[in-house]
Image (cartoon, rainbow, N blue to C red):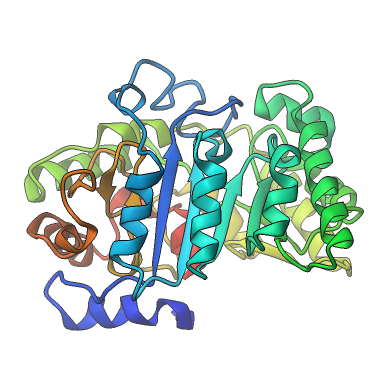
Amino acid sequence: MKLNLKYLKGFIGYKLFDGKALPPSSISFNLTSKCNLKCEMCWQYRDGGIFKKESPLLLEGEMEFQDLKKVVDDISGSLKNITLWGGEPMLHPDFAQFTGYIKEKEKYLNIITNGSLLKRFAKSLVEMKVNNIVVSIDGPQEIHDEIRGVKGSYQRTIEGIETIKDFKYNYSENLPRIEINFTISDLNFDRVADTVKILQGLNINSITISHLWFADKDMYEKNEKIFKDELKTSSPYFHAFIRETSGVNLKILTSEIAKVKETRWKIPIIFLPDLDNKEIFQYYSNPGNSFRFIYCLVPWRTACVLPNGDLTPCGDRPDFIVGNLRKERFSQLWNNEKFRSYRRALKGHKLFPMCKRCCELFLQ
């Protein structure tokens, strides 16, 4: 596997240390579990998602600005990149204040959003020179709204992108970059090329076409066994990733992807992961096959702060907690025994069974 240079620090820790890691250069904040959409493929809010029913993660109070600031200050020396996500991060009451503080500290800031509140924050996002915003658009208007579960969400997202474009022009700014993420599902697999064509008309920097993250029951059960046997815990929230993919017509999907690849577009197109036709069939029919993506460096290079201050080695594992940042400093938790045990277990298996369709794996 060819390694992206920004993952080098994680790779060094992975190879040389017994579960320990060098100080992280990046961190992500899941600012809030609240969301104003109900996306069909989302492991948090879709039918069967972890927040579909009452969840302890929803009941615990969110960190306020002073708490968030302390985390950044504690690791500011090594920290270069910060990602804000959720839920919908712009629903956090201190979103604008925290965003401003991150940019005052001269950190690279990436925001992952459904785009519905972009118009409200457009002026400040441009003024603060936020580096990058990833916006989800999953089809033409009627398809996008169906997937998002809220009518009018497509139009609000487009208006937000256009408003940012206007402020960038008025202020002679190039930032923030706008990346569109299109996630393939059984509702839009036949509209990939159409969507790319529509998006070419927007003032954006790139389009990522992401294959669906999913798992089957066998992967879930194998994952549970590893967690119970080696980490003395369980990972019940991973049930939210179990889903049926037979609704994706793979012949049509491969044809759609071929159309996109055969056309010269003015906006760069990225496939996550980039698979040939044979691999696409394997991807959806054999979720246990990780192809050439054979290990994960995430817990050696970053960590995720959950809304209530809990720290987890992986943002998509909100049920494995190494400590709470309201009670302890980040520097006390980064290489504590629980974090190290997670790294050792992951390295021993190269990948946990439920990791084999994770987008972070493919970004390496």
